[in-house]
Image 1 (cartoon, rainbow over the protein chains, first blue to last red):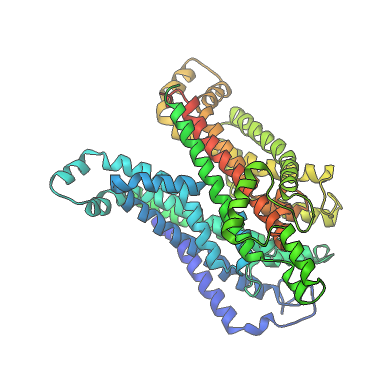
Image 2: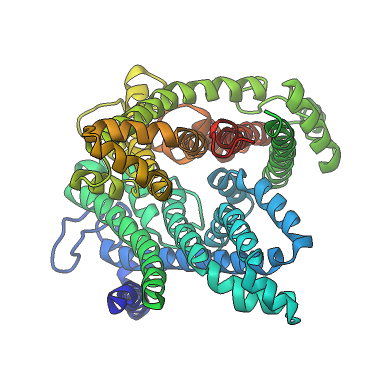
Length: 265
Length: 303
């Protein structure tokens, strides 16, 4: 079971590595061919409306997707762990909770849309922003859990023998909130994968970076492209990959934690 | 309800701060990013400097960022945020009008989803294999259904590919929202019931022992978790509204999402800031209502 749980992460890492190797090894696959060519041995998914090999774009898009997911994962993890440490102190708990309450309602996708005006937002930044904003609901959950843990008798006992806040947060609170942290983090990372694809689908984000959303968007924007076989393939395959990638991010971390929990019982 | 009064005051305070925050962010980002759209025209001598100066003044782009933000925030509460450059009409009216079009499609879809999720849970409960499949579907983002609608526009001509608020577009958009809302609400409902299962297990066992049919037990479970479920649904409605930014350009529906998208693409800072603020404010309102609903109506949490 544990091996299966880590399987998702391993598959994700392998896919990224393969994608990077293939993409870096064969940059000319993005050069111009006749547009919307039917799938054949040279171009298994055909070519896009601009005349680039669709399989090559798909592989390049994998990097963007993973980048968005991983940066959201890292940001969310950092914020939630920080929230645990800060909210272990009674003085700061109220402040953390109030900040999270205010930021929970901030519209994420619209904010990214507005920010897309100022900079060509790369997938990494999309991941960071989504990771930060999607964690706010999690911060409230984690603060509530921290409050429960710090009120428990063993924490009181720990305080009585002189343990400081940092020690209590590291030794008692963090291990007991880890499951909640992982759950919110996995949600944030899968939301980032979806947001990256969705925003690039409507033509936002850095135009120089290939993305699955951009593949779909280009087909939908090109009149008549969707009526062709390569068009249908180039809409459905990237969408399937997006769902698969978001699922991998969502499931792998969550299952890993649950397996750890079961093992510790 | 002695406990709910200060809570409501706190929630209103949070809402106020939230609206101010959204308003400030949107104005500052939109103004700094979109700048003055007349400058280029003036330099290229398509506009004389005098006309350009006059236009900048008319559209309120001559003020500093700090003063402009204050003016925008005060105008927000009065319904006068300035003039849209692209549509040459009051930005606030355009945004409010387009929000109504968005709600016209979103509310029926969401309400149907809300009812369908409860009906499904009543009839089939949480241990049905089909329920498990629907819960998996809740993971699919709305834009995938929107892409299917966009593809259907090209393949079978329904709905029309042209951007509009026609009946067929409303139906298509409502359908997308229903599909998203139904699966997510059902997933949420089962999650909420599962969370309360420890408290409810004795009660359900007693009902089973009294030979109650499963659908009646499920009905009673829904009634118990209704405050939490309504709070969850309200928050989800706010999030659904926010996602109109991606869904509407794909479906070609001219609601608030499309207006925000267009104002960004066509460099209309006042309209972009107003649309974003209204969208964000409604989102905030939904989150706050959700937060107040549960402790107000749940007898287990009510003071």
